[in-house]
Length: 126
Image 1 (cartoon, rainbow, N blue to C red):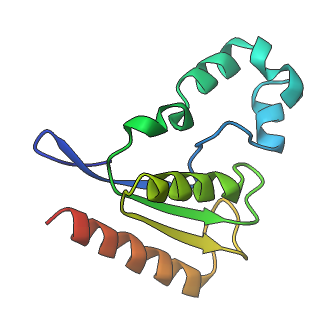
Image 2 (spheres, helix red, strand yellow; image 1 turned 90 degrees about the vertical axis):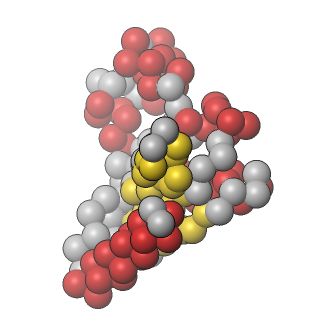
C-alpha cells in the first residue's frame, strides 16, 4: 500500500489473494483438499481476512499484476480485484502476463513490469 501522511493513495496487488480459491497451493498449504478448507483454522482466518469480503469499503487506486501460468494464485483473482475496483469507480490498472507464472522471469516482461510499477508509484505518490 502507498501511504502519504495518514492516507492510502494507492495499492499494488502483485499475485495477490483476493477471493479465496487458490488451486493446488491451497491444498498443499492447508494439508487438505479445498472442499475441507472451511473446517481448518488457517483457512477460516484466511477467508475471514479476505479483501473480497470488504469490496464495499474499497476507495484506493489499485494496480494488479498477475501471470496466467501461476498455479499458486489464479490470475482470475487479480482480474476480480481489477473488476471490483472499476465497478466501484476506483482507478485500477491490470497487467496480465499470459506467459509468466508466480514470478516474472522473461527479460522483456520484467522491463514492462518495472515500467508499469514505477509509473504507478510516480502517479499516485505525487
